[in-house]
Length: 364
Image 1 (cartoon, rainbow, N blue to C red):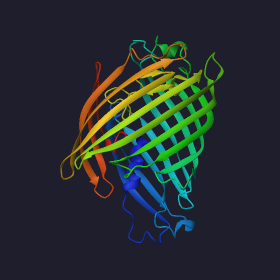
Image 2: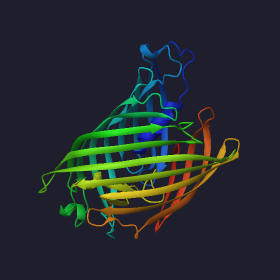
Image 3: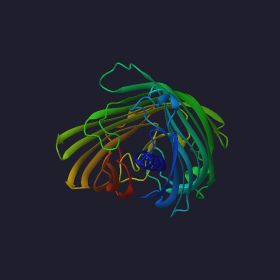
Image 4: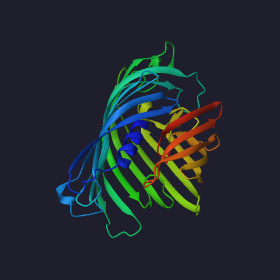
């Protein structure tokens, strides 16, 4: 979710204390403010804990580990309690990241696939745990860092309210009355970017295979199993001293019967801005998005972006003749010149849809 990227971005750019070379633990309080179509204005606070392990004290390039405890409340009366973390150990040989959180939330549901149905507002409470434990492989690889490892997820999706007469209330949508999913899989992560927050060259790739995860549905459906395979790849190209072209390729394929909240999604702050998060969902989804990033004046920058995507299912595959598109523009203000961490202000437009976004860090 968005809060993860906001908290991790703020945590990573937080200034280190002057004696950070000898201090193994530092604690920093941070304010938290953002705006999205799904939340409207959100506000809260976070505590960032930075840890340096004794085994890594001799290595100047060993990354510190961070745990961020955050809480936010939104204009839509949503409550988010969140603990994202990233751990580096033994000179970056081991890398673990993930989240533990609890949410009291509400969303709009727009149906599955190409259905044109009236949106339904539903309420949901859910604790969620996601763990990723990786080890660096092929350390002699000069082009970038390659990690491989295991992934695990647990989510208890308790649907508390639905709209009378809607699809979710009918029980026909898998997980529409609630579900509990758990399971794991494999992952590969590659990174050759020259900068974490504002790359001008390089590639970052995140590949996932969640294999035969279990979903226990509230209602008559009972227990089902599903697998999902996804690839999220971004590349960055410096056009000149003041312009960068960023490309993002995303694909997600689901096999089996997954709860509707675990299907492949398009829309939101990161994928296809201009549409509500989950405005499009189905077993399969694919997306290509581009963004032209321009330096304007000192800390001020501007972007223009566009995206095109498609949905699919087990019967039709990807429905490339029914594409979804969005475009927009935005402004950037550099909060941290050293790391080029930006405040992001975007306005996206889709078909009969639009969205305004105010947050920290780039979409991809």
